[in-house]
Length: 308
Image 1 (cartoon, rainbow, N blue to C red):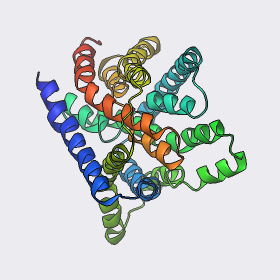
Image 2: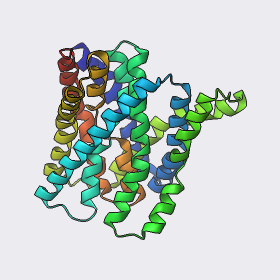
Image 3: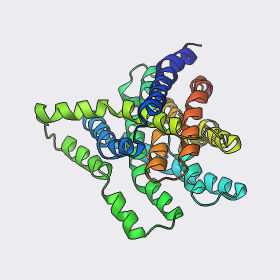
Image 4: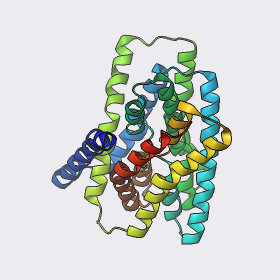
């Protein structure tokens, strides 16, 4: 009950309030969602990724094992989604939209505070989650955008040019390089980075609210619920199997399984809005998975206690 209450009060309720504010602002002022989307892609998200990587403490051993787990998990979920997509007969933009709603998950503003609650501020488990967050920041800005453009048969050179304009693919190596070489950042420069990174969560949630406020609420219940089940139930089950196969135990195993259990990432909505690819489905998948995660994440937290 403690975990349930914490997740409800500290994750779902604040997220829902911010989303509701976005809905209200759209209804009142008809905010331009594409401007909000570009702010997220080109300013707020890169600043958050840089700050978290620059300030983190990552060992090479933990980095290598976590990256191997992530690659195996991503490959397994990708193959599973290919089977689901073929069985459901999805066409066009719905293919990457459904895939993105399952393989991209909220590894930053949901998973990091959750990790620190469950493991009581443990620096080791936090470093694992930060590595997952790094990969979940990189993939939507590369593969996610590629898949959406490919589904629309857009010119691949133009698609690659679009990907190469995204700051986050440069921010990650720069952050690691500066951290590895112990390059200090002057206070007058670091202060704006802090301001901008702190604004990411609010802006991303407002963007989701604006999208929800502007769309027609015609729920495709079957597809949204299928996405939720695959993300919230199948995801952590696959993570558990991979941990078992890799022979990982203890806190690391628990942290990795928990990292797979969080709801759909806001990045799937930002991609959908930016490239006009099933934004209604993507918004509904994010919103509903966040609500249902109250129950599913609580169950996962209970079950990982039995991982040796």
